[in-house]
Length: 212
Image (cartoon, rainbow, N blue to C red; front, side):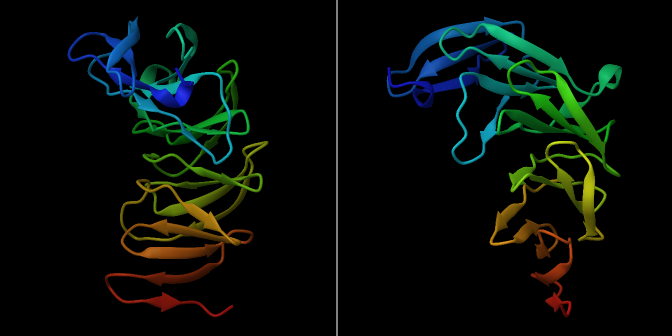
């Protein structure tokens, strides 16, 4: 039928199940029972050029992978242990799934896409609502503590953090272009991708810039 891009995964009303729908035909290809109906499943956001043979979803405090052709569960990973809560939309990049935890744990998780095994965790000062972005081997993530973090994708080691806002953060996925990280909060902020130096901020409340 044209592959994974022609399949959409959706919850089925109040039933504890998911369904894969063939787009354009509105035909149910498969259902997968056993998922919490109270949590709306979220699909993985792939990095440009990412290829995958699975569908990666988050629901409540779990991340799971399913076969796109049959809906068969490939693996399930629980995030945050017994504390419960929720996880952000997952990000797929270079064979790794990245998710943030909300609200009890304040960690960024890196999972092996093929097995679901936890590769590393990185703790921020508050919860993470939005998926991060990966560029040049670095994970950039916005936390509700008002900081933008840069973490090594391979190890989860912090490179830098920049305090970008006095208000709540954690709700935006950064964008990276030409060595600059852009993030929205109470303003739009531009941060040097290598050093974390705050370059400028623009938006409500006036504009600001720091000299190089």
